[in-house]
Length: 152
Ligand code: C2G
Image: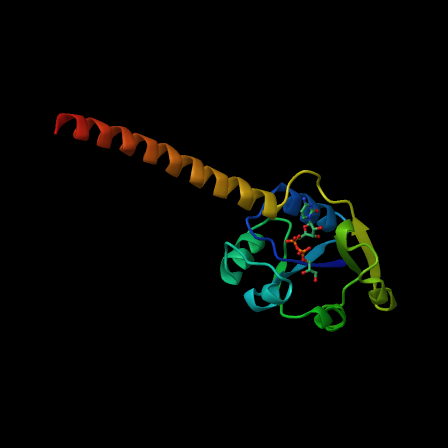
């Protein structure tokens, strides 16, 4: 049994997340994913759309994921690696070099991210859709008000 471990927020799960998780699973037989709790995300400066329970359930529903654990702090990785007898710690290349100290406990790899997709971009697109729709409704209502005024 070759166990792989990774961590992340996984808010608004998208193809970049799925590509990473599937690539990591291909490296072994068991993939454990530490999903950042809401409290830890505040420390990471992230405001999520989905709370921890939803994000953990969505990630856990992926065929390539065997176990989801909560990620409560930066320091738990070494404990998790020992507790789950992890062979490989893997994460996106945006973290290149940040977790090299874990090489004392297991193999550490940084995989390329999927380009041009991020939760931050998705949030921006969603907010623009909302405002565009609201603008259209407002224009329509203004038109109706003009007609009403003309009939007065
Ligand atoms: N990812 C990716 N391609 C993207 C976006 C994300 O490969 N376009 C990867 C990231 O590199 C990471 C994983 O998907 O390995 C989860 O990304 P995030 O949810 O943004 O998590 P992050 O903030 O990187 O949290 O202790 C480690 C942290 O909890 C990692």
